[in-house]
Length: 318
Image (cartoon, rainbow, N blue to C red):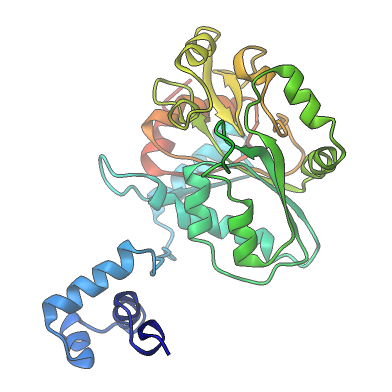
């Protein structure tokens, strides 16, 4: 029997210390005594449990200021649902702030007994949602990707979430077997003419609920950072008024999809504005405000999970 099988690992110790601290309510001194270690080591183990993602914290108390912002967002944009989470402070990454609330929204649908098709976009916020998701049995549902899962170098797209969710909830899943963005419109059309691809596209178009991230099209655009568009392509789309993208499809400040640039070569399924089904946007951050606003105006998304600073910024814009 190997050492790994017979002796606790550092992560085992961190998980045990994290459990005692966050679930058992023990102090670090008590943990040190229970585990036979120094207080300093107990403190490091508890900290590691959090940084390694072994512990997920969910806020059960609804803060009044956040509730007020949720009501204001629903009234202003006619949203079906809004979740606003407390800020983590100036300069902090907003994804951890909204991940647990996004996961809770997805779990609402996963717990439904009636079978659903759940369509999913990609991105950092979506991946954060999946990391915060509670494992469960949800094999009555089907999960389908809205966007291609092949990167420009032929590798699997790093932020694709369908398989990650399926692994946690044991639901059938359908990746979109096309490039995120094809080299030419003709190649994109050829991919979409393939019978297996047509079946996945049809499934995505019939989805009962949609979850998507919202990407900005400023100079720090995720599509540029991840190598899906060139600087020249981004310049062209910015000149045409691009402010945001959902599932790789680029739109302007009013949420109108553009007929320029990579939109002519994007794989997968475009989220139709004014859907009669839930279309949940998971997004936060100052750089995304214009993109989220455009998606709200045209109702590409009709529900939103965000944080306090982003909600305030959205409500302050016209």
